[in-house]
Length: 462
Image (cartoon, rainbow, N blue to C red):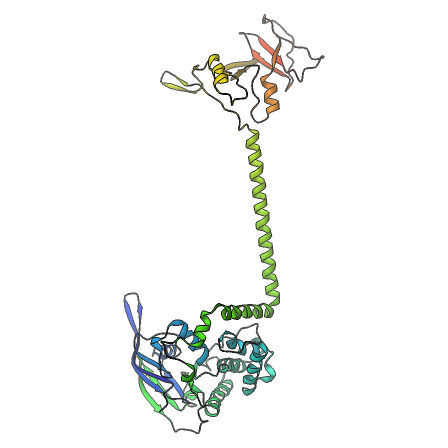
């Protein structure tokens, strides 16, 4: 005796929502023979969709057993379940789920691309898809996209896609839910014809009694249980083809052919590359814009990296210009009246220390000393408290601008004489040429740079 296509015993399904257990199915048992046309009816929340998910290997029962063509589905790993869904099950959805920018023949041939046992050549896939569309009366619509088809035609394309792999079981979840009465009758007549003429086993989930009237067996569910199983008079059907689905499915302890192929890298990589190439070809403009965006992003990244490297190099050069080879030794700090004067306020370094550094540190190219004091600068009726620095004649170049610093440190007095406080000669001050330092209570000592001094420039003292 041949094994039934579906046999479930004591199947239950419980969902855990927080601390609450929701029992969607409760001790359901069902047997479906090959070639049957079954309609499952019931109110919303009765467990129809949950039962459909378990039968389609999309969900696992919490308890109970499920045999598909004599194979215990609970013993199959997830890759095996994926291969079973791809090879032996067909799905028809209420919302069609067609690729919007893909024509009808490409939508129908798509499962053959993902099936490991399907044809590898595009011509063979399209020929087989064209034959299925021809059986459903859509041969002249194979180049139309879903947007160019009516609702009934879209659903027939979805049925053709479900039948392309010659499944043992066709599961239809509300196949007429989005269709009007005329298109609903056409779809149900198509399913009925497939069942009677080709022997396809079909299970339909529906709310509508007129849709269930096309079936030979009607199951009614309530609160997760089957409360009635009504069988109608058997109608003449096509004989079952020789060699059931069980001939193509092996025991769980032995990995199936399509799962073994999925473990190999080359067939899977070829499938992925083919699918990607076809997707790019179908969406040329979108692919071109995407590649343009990638190019712009990569170019922007390269520019940002280049700018960052340039800025880094500029900062490095600026730091080098600041005098990375200059070492400054500061004296200690003095404390007066409980207040710390800061670094350099105490005179703890002497000229002898400079000589010692010159003798004991051969790596030092030049050694100089600097004296810093604060003083009052006065011009006319204005006073400023500022710092006064003095350096030795052989001061090393350093600072932000070595040339200007050297000039500033190598200024020498050109003339100086005591001030009687009564001179009315106006002071001559030129920026960058003259430096004035107070040398007595009411007088000034003028300095000029050697580089900028001109014979016409005469030093004045007031």
